[in-house]
Image (cartoon, rainbow, N blue to C red):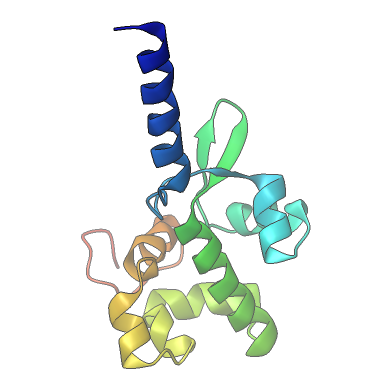
Length: 138
C-alpha cells in the first residue's frame, strides 16, 4: 500500500469512529465529567456509590460512568429532590417496588428504559431484605 493510501484509510476510520455513538452501557465518563453533566459535585456521586445506588466501572483507581449510569443518577436525583424521598427511604422503596413505580414513569418510558433492572439488582447486595425475586431474599 502506498503511503498516501494508508493515510486516507486511517482518516476514514477515524471519522467513522468519531461519528459513531458509543453503546450507552460503555463506561466513558470520568467522575468529573459525569458530575458536570449532572450538575452535581463529584462528592455526591461518591456518596451515591457508598450508599449502593450506583456501581461505576473502575479502570485502575479511576471511576468511569456510562450513559446508562448518568440516566440512572438523573432518575435517582429526581426521586430524591423532586419527590422528596430520603436516601434511606429510597433504598428501602427500591427493594420493595420497581423504580418506575416510584418515579411514575409512563409505560412507553418504562419499556425503553435500559437502566431499571440493572441498577435495582445492585441494591440487593445490601443488608436490607427486598421483595425482588432472588435466591438471597429473606
